[in-house]
Image (cartoon, rainbow over all chains, first blue to last red; front, side, top):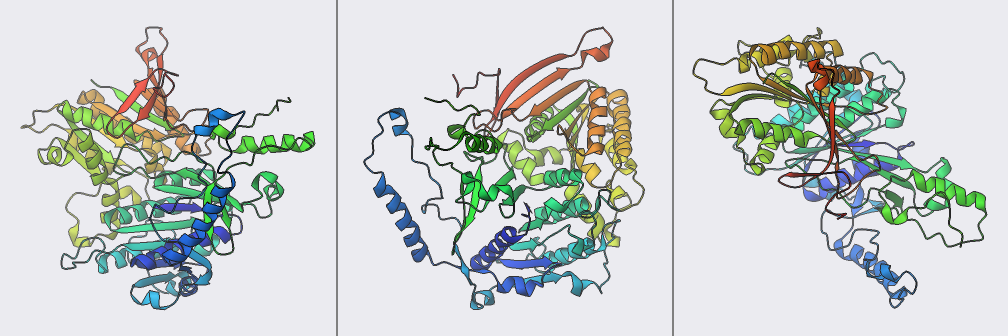
Length: 342
Length: 250
């Protein structure tokens, strides 16, 4: 259960949402798309087109070789101890073949949709039906959505209830902007909502459905609008993976020289720890994303070296303050508050 | 015997302690009632196998009573009317308006009350995790009542042990949760408090654990004993070491 906190204007989280669904189409999984904002047909028409392996590899290969040829023979003279450390890998190497890459500037062609089955849930079309399940004081929109998901899981046999079905497939569920006003929940409007437990109950039951069947789910939530932070803490506990996207649009960080190459930060709040004592913890937790013309990439945030000594003291202080905001543990990049002046 | 242990985690995941206690008590031959609210049975089973215990076998021989919260909740909400057996579901407080955990308590009590043929050593109640009950609509008072009833039944009457996991955060805005956690802290005999490191994320030291033995409860005018260790979780076990003495540093 992947829980995504939306960025302020929803631009990038929508992109991530579409990537998840597009991957499903390319892998031949079934899709279930639910939204109260846009009709799922529109969402599906706007999925990014997959890049054929060759073209992407060439692009990435070109960039990598360009970088390599520049500092090929530079041997370090002063900080020679660092010579032996591996070069900083900003983006994932092409050797890992997990997943596919997508071209954001093109939309997916309709032929790719032919082979998969997809189901949609558009809230405003479903309002007329009465939920049959015991609603247990939950918001009725959520109840209907859960019932719809459960029905699809049962009918299409994702929960193994139909032993006849030989081919096992995965259901990818995408739910957009859960918790927003459009779903009839008031947690985004008031501090003391009418039913504080609707969303958490929904999440728990959804978790149960996912655990019982061969499915994976991504939810985007406008977390910045939710007034009551207690809900966010509870929801984090109930999800397997929590990722927050913070875009720089309109915030003071947009002009910060630290972040000039990037469009936003990725905060990984929680990673799944399933079927094992440990989880797959990566080396660093500072990730940033950028949207180039064709690609949306997530990279490690690495700061450019602080080389200039003509910069005035005031802005150096700002840089240091911003650097402190990065989660600590990014050991190689710790810039202290006091600069050592040589 | 008759002890209440509280597992508390802050800024990190303390579930490795739950896995430990589960395999520990099963290996010791105790009868265990495990209220697993957060994960599925197969998750616990796979981890337990790495630790050397087979949960399926334990269930079959009657040593383990497993309440899989997620599955039970689904059965309650989506189940057909005919499928319901005579007993009410332990989680029926979810669908009822009354926030009353009595059904859950009855389930615990019936599963741990020794039947005539049982030869297990002391009963144990294990809960993972209590904070989920609040998310499902139980009030803090109902949760505390439930724990109180369990203590009376399991610790005092049956001379068994209880181990409960809760989440907490400093500066948490979840007041209900903090209320439950603070109250349980006061009543526990042993608190295992797992925290992420204050200095941030580290690859070699996953966190620190504070072991608080509540000697002060025994009215001998002593203060609680507090011990602090750091730990690193590996695939099949967890290594503990004194602060600052991680293998990566030495």
